[in-house]
Length: 280
Image 1 (cartoon, rainbow, N blue to C red):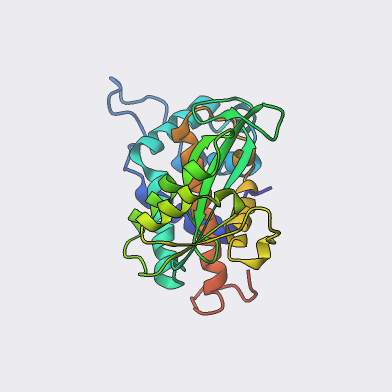
Image 2 (image 1 turned 90 degrees about the horizontal axis):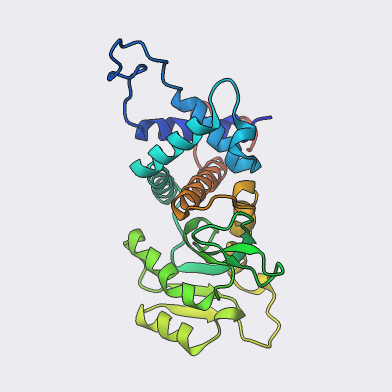
């Protein structure tokens, strides 16, 4: 069973491969020049994609083509090279160029997921009997395209994470002059309003004690994006212990979400030679 449809995997791999450095098939440092050939990057890419999508262990996904140690080693190499971060930025820039990011409407909210293995970013979950959990403070544009996230322990309140999450906007310049940030009632405090005013942002915050359906404001976009991200089971139940690895998998998932939205929305406005005859 493929992790993703081919119309999504193929362009994703082409861009991913363009970011990888050139490597020889055999290790040039070997005295005889005849060491075992290097495992293909495409094989490791497919294995990481399956890990992200299905949430299985490295040992479960390993087979005769490559071992779990090889998958981890190549993953760490690509993280050091910043390949996953670059892929997310390229997908975001392509979406902004072709469709356009809705940056005058920003939505931010936190989501708690399980982290059974603990780790650098994990903490006691207040909604799961004190078990280890992970919180992400996610930010999206007005359509729901993920713009970044801040990781923290599940016992961290949403409000202190607002400032570092808003700092992620610095990498998206130029920004509109008037930006509205949509927040739920958990951010209804003087501290939040001060944080927004210091950055010249306007906030639309749900009031505590008043019923505010998520559909009543633009806040539902970030809720939908959290659901999209949780569709990648490696993120919904995180066994990774290092923050750098967790962020890499989030960057990978965000690139997929952005590319998928780009292809589906561009289908109605653009034409290309191999475009499907039916809407994807």
